[in-house]
Amino acid sequence: MSFNSFAADCQCDSGFEMVEGHCKDIDECVDPGRCSQTCTNKPGGYKCSCIEGYVLERQHYCRAEGDVAWLYYSNRRDIRRLRSDNSFMEIVVEDTGNSVGMDMDIADGLLFWTDRRDLTIQR
Ligand SMILES: [Ca+2]
Image (tube, rainbow, N blue to C red; front, top):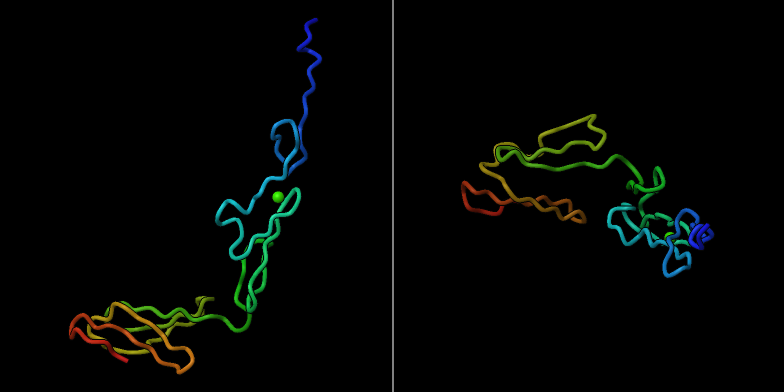
């Protein structure tokens, strides 16, 4: 029997890794995308959390509180909006020419877009 057959086989608990003979916590938060917003490293694990206005779902994903959100988009001819639960879509602005870029001023309820046909910025 050789000396090597008595060598210790050390293993670390889940969430730890062997570093120079010692179990060291793995910082799971180093990997981007582990949590949709905030990741806090904990001994042997990690915890996801959300900024104010969002709620944590399925321990990793943050969803905006409140009503269903709207997605505004352009198909170049019209500007439309779609509920995030996919239950309703409507045209917000018809016949925009060739709308390609959009921005919103939420506070004042304004929608802006660039029109490549007329080379203008519309409101
Ligand atoms: Ca950890």
